[in-house]
Amino acid sequence: IGEDIVATELILPEGHRIRPIDQGAMIASGITEVEVAVPPKVIIVPTGSELIQPGHAAAPGKIIEFNSRILSGYVRTWGGEATAHPPVKDDPEQLKEAISKASNSYDIVITNAGASAGTKDFSAATLSSIGEVVVRGVAIKPGKPIILATVGSVAVLGLPGYPVSALLTLQLFGRELIYDFLGIPAPELE
Image (cartoon, rainbow, N blue to C red; front, side, top):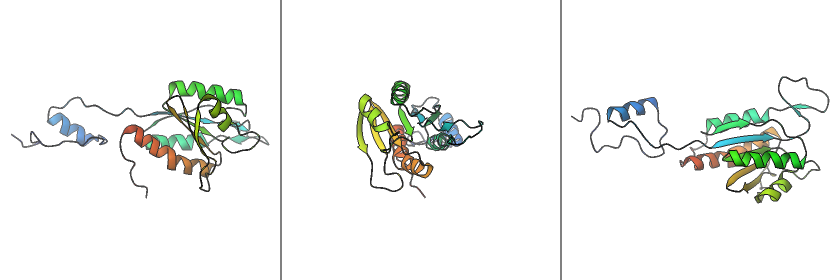
């Protein structure tokens, strides 16, 4: 009696990521069901008429869209379920439709590019028309033009398109959002 687990002993703390050894400890103590945090469903919506999918030949004025793959990988690393949306052209109505549709099916929507104040940057105006822009721009470089918004109860991050800016702002804001959604503190960055 009490050789493996003592009756009043804590097996796992709340918010602990269950490892294979933890499963063994739970089963050994007779615990076969636990409540778990459901990973947030995150969609990355790249924007830009110049974007083409990987595998297509790049022509003058066209860019292979790769940011969504990088951002999706980090979202998965932090515990979210990531989906990459096909690129949305620089058209306010197409962007509005994509974000509106995504906010009905996902917990977090991330747009990539279109966050600045250029003639083809429609993210802020589009988000204002269907939700609430909470923050437009922060005092960091790179990454200044980030947009933090909501559409209904869904968090929306409007990331800059430059890859380093996109990754930096995702790490600063998206990472925290994902861990908060999971109900656990984000681990310290190295």
